[in-house]
Image (cartoon, rainbow, N blue to C red; front, side, top):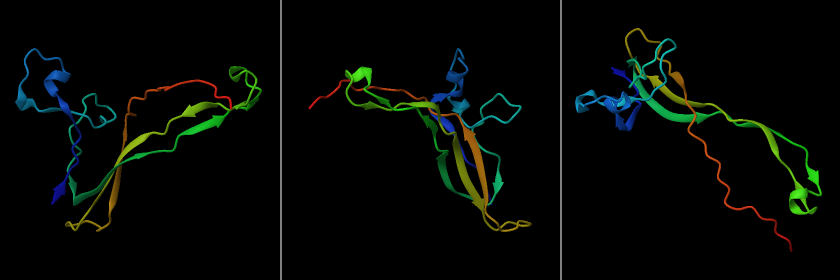
Length: 135
């Protein structure tokens, strides 16, 4: 048999994504998989692959950063305590990873791994509060 992995936007139809005047439900959802190198249209699924798809997961590379020097007598805390900051923060890339395998005519019966690079999710920084605490 053959398998494929689907990746679609579950709330936005293809017509809504393309700002169509009328929406036809038969056009289906918007594809959200990474486009091929020369393509501009987001595909809805991967190509058919011989075997069974299993082990579908999202993977992120580790985030890298550089620790800046610690400041003694931090002016933000009125000269008390120590402050350490980070610089050059590079978030890791995200990947859709899945394995395919199975017995097919002419196959080597080995498991193959496919890794598709995804766009990183939107990041937001939120600070709950900022206040020095003295005891």
